[in-house]
Length: 394
Ligand SMILES: [Zn+2]
Ligand SMILES: [Zn+2]
Image (cartoon, rainbow, N blue to C red; front, side):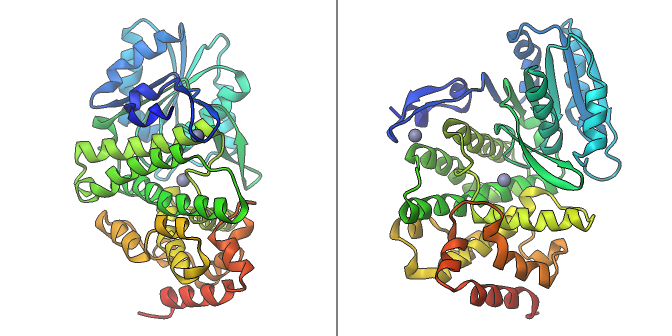
């Protein structure tokens, strides 16, 4: 029981065990390979699928970072490789009709494995194609910028709106720290922001367990917490792109996905901090503005949610209170890696920010500290206080 807690990352693939939460958990990912120089193991992974014809998707940035090497390794190993490099221009790739259509139009018959060489967006697109075509996929991570590598949700944009399509889990995830530590610092900070978001996400999960009786798996909580501790403990080293710190980061991001995969819900990864982030993002997309990286927004939202936990004080059940970080602690972590702390820094104006606090709880039908604040009639006072702190003091 719960032996998964003693497994290394690579041993967790295909885990299947009876958990102390009373459920039987299965992780439907075959290969998890992380570490220095592991890109060399890609041909072996593809061989494990019995595949011959590979379709690899990257963009101009990720092709340079990993796609080129992956393509060469596969060709040298005798695979037939169709490599499509999407043009993301100077900016990040937007996973909307044009990019997704281009990806599908380039899919040749008899392709038997898909590879996403990239991070968030490319991974989401390929996992969607995998779900629709039933062709398995492998992720070659280029940046530890978000926790979606091991999740089955594919957020894509259709008709200007972000839609979270249910997709499929990858056959394998390959995270080479030699590649990921070269990623732009902004992406590393984003990954860090997404990880520290788990501090409040886990507190929200406990809060919901206490308030609504929602199912909660302690093993998953511990799994995420252990990974989280390594990341917060190496924040300074991460700011210097230290190998081990980058490995801890990608492990934590993948492990959160693993925890989600085990129980089939995203509770271990996302709480109220993600709701604020989604609220801002939807508004940015509607205004046709650059939506900023997911983890950067989640990072900014985390100390804000921590502050709401603090303000709600004795209304919070003891178990959740113990898990919630203080605002000061969460802000300190962001500052250590040089990540933005104020919503102003990413172009969120006063009105949008204030409204997001009032309406954030509507983003998802999932109990969080925002719901508690609304129930207790405290949300408006809280929204005014926090908005004032960011926007009226200099
Ligand atoms: Zn469990
Ligand atoms: Zn996230």
